[in-house]
Image (cartoon, rainbow, N blue to C red; front, side, top):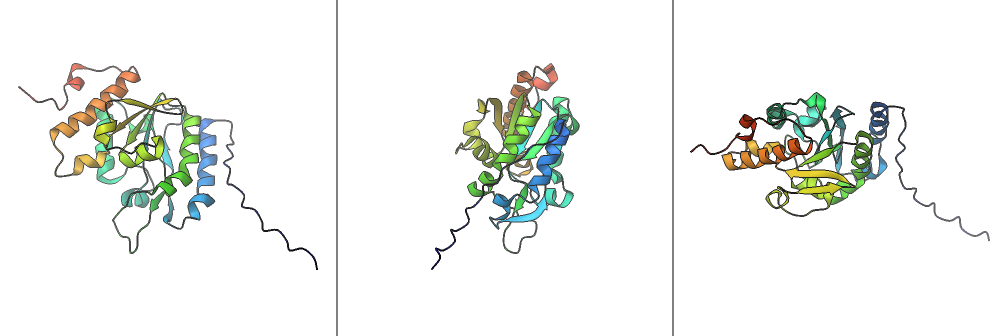
Length: 228
């Protein structure tokens, strides 16, 4: 009697970066992300991909955890009211969305039963499944520094498990690239947001501007300071 056929071995998914320009290489990642088996096989993510936007040659990269309702609907990172807050932050820094590169660790909105506008945090498994993409994006864009928005993004990118308040005011690193952790722009939408939170976020932006050797005016340094 013939011996039974051996069970087929699972083949690990491997990213293949192709293209002669940074934009082309990022596009090759985007195409692979649409059908990335490690993420799709989890069965916990929705179907619409929100990959990234911005300048492939950017010196500053912004990283969030995952798209939410508004991002899924509009197909772009940091949309809706939180996106408007981000636009305001960048404007105060003297730059625009077109000058930075914006991406997510997880490229699909985390799913929930009977989901409408509600969002949930990405799980460690979801972030681990998608981490090869953000790693490859950083390798292609080669930013001078990265901003990680929120606790979950910091956990996925840096492996940290602290509150933002404990992680900010310091430089971390992702494979040699400096990373600043700060509050997510959506924090500024909360009714409990106070001027001190706005100032703390802005202090992190000032640190980023200093790292990038951007000009900083006295007016910019004074944003959200308590008036005597």
